[in-house]
Image 1 (tube, rainbow, N blue to C red):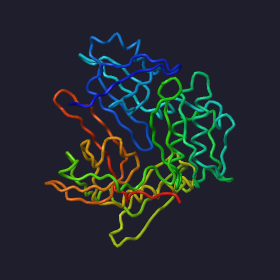
Image 2 (tube, rainbow, N blue to C red):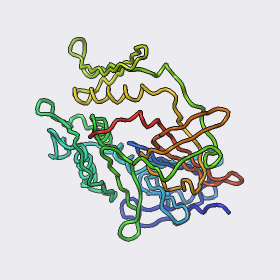
Image 3 (cartoon, rainbow, N blue to C red):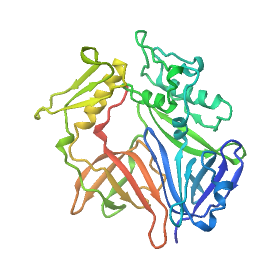
Image 4 (cartoon, helix red, strand yellow):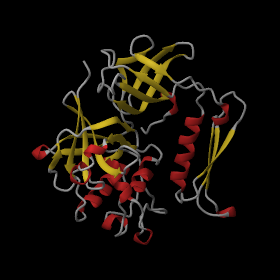
Length: 364
C-alpha cells in the first residue's frame, strides 16, 4: 500500500484555504541548510482552470502532507505551460526574502550594527519584511542567540537604501560570519489552521550527532553516488580576495600544515568589504577543501532504522556503505533532503545530500 500524500494551497495574504487536495503529479520536494526549500510538480491540462484560482504564482502558499503529517510548505512562484502539462515550481519560506529589498536603509533604523548577534539581525530582517504593507506571511524566527558578532566600530554592518539590498543576501551575510548561525525552515499550523513558516536558527550548529538512527547498505540504503576523491578541489591554503583594487584590495589567508603537499585555492568575493567576514569565508572554504573521500548523496528507504521525519537538516548520522562502488564508514552531515512520492509503479524515493561531518567547524 502506497503512502498517502496531499497537496493543498492557501491565499498567501489571508491564509484562506483554496484547494485541499490538488491533483499534482511528478512531485519532488525538500529542504536545505542555509537555503530555502524547493518543490516541483505537474498539473495535467484538464486541470488548467485551477491555476488562476488555486495556484496563483506569487500569491499562493503550497503545503505537502505525508500520512497527515505536514512535511513542507512554501510559496508558488511559477506555473507555466510546457507541452502537455503545466509545471509548478515553488520554494520555501526563505525564498520570500529574495524578492524583498531594504528600501529604507538599515532595516528602517534597526541598524547599523556593531558587535551585533547575527541571530538578532536575521530576526530584524524578517520583522522588517513582514512589517511592510501586504508583506506579512506569518513567518516566525527562533529566539536562538549566538556569541558571533556582526560589525565593528571601525566597520559597522549597514545596508544603504540607495543600493536597495536584497533582504535574503543580508541573511546570507549573517551565516557567513565566522562562527555564525545556520538556518533552515519548517512548516506547521497556526491560528485558524493555516500553514505557518518557522525559520529554525541553530547555534553553534543546526542538528545534532545522532546515535539513534543510521544508514547502512543492505538495510535502509537503496542506492549511492560513488565516493569522490578529487584533489583538484583540495587545498590547505585559501587566499580570499575581497573588495578593492591593487594594493588596496582586501585579502585574507587561511592556512594549515597537515603533512601533505601544499595546495592553494583563490576565493574571489569582490563584493566583500568586511575584513572579518572575508577571513570567515576563507576559513570556511579551507575547512571544506581539506576533505578527501566523501559520500555526497544516498537514496534511502523509509525504515525503522531511520523513519522519514526522524532526521533534521544539520544532523550528523552514521553511514555505512559496502557495495561495488563504495566502501565507507563514518559520520556524515545531512545538508539537504529531497523526497519524491510514489509515481505509478515507482516507489517512494528519498534522497539525502551529505557532507563529511569533519568539513564543518562551529562557533563556541
